[in-house]
Amino acid sequence: MILANNKKAYFDYFIEDKIEAGIELVGSEVKSIKASKVSIKEAFVRIIKDEVYIMGMSVVPWEFGSVYNPEEKRVRKLLLHKKEIKKLHEKVSQKGYTIVPLNVHLSKGYVKIDIALGRGKKSYDKRESIAKKDQKRDIERAMKERY
Image (cartoon, rainbow, N blue to C red; front, side, top):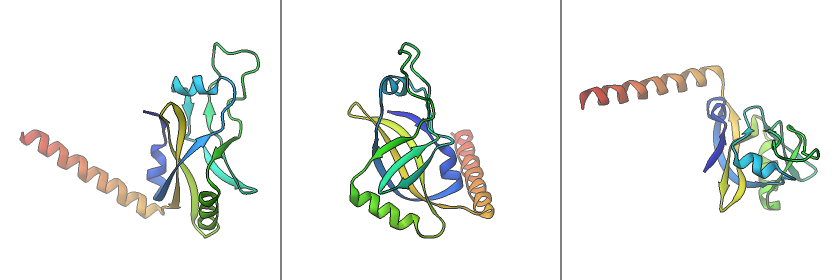
């Protein structure tokens, strides 16, 4: 069950390699995320000292929580194997690659996040993807009218 989606990532980047990671959460953040009060639109991923962190991910504080609710946009650690971190670090060190959060979802009751290795699109690539999307929409519209 997808709780938050980053549609703009597919528009701004060529997505090459997807990895599912756990998120280190504290307090009532899990309840808030399960209530879909999470946003990853402005979020980005960084590798700091062989650990992966997501920054800018917004989790609205749980309204029935205590005064000890964590901050809304705090830095959260992502849980990955060392091999995966090393692989990501090697790719990101190359020019043009970045790590992009794609979606936050539930997997067997646990909150997970899909991150991907992305290569930035140029403006002409974006125009091309818009044109393809328009063509697909026109074809679907024609097929609907035909039947």
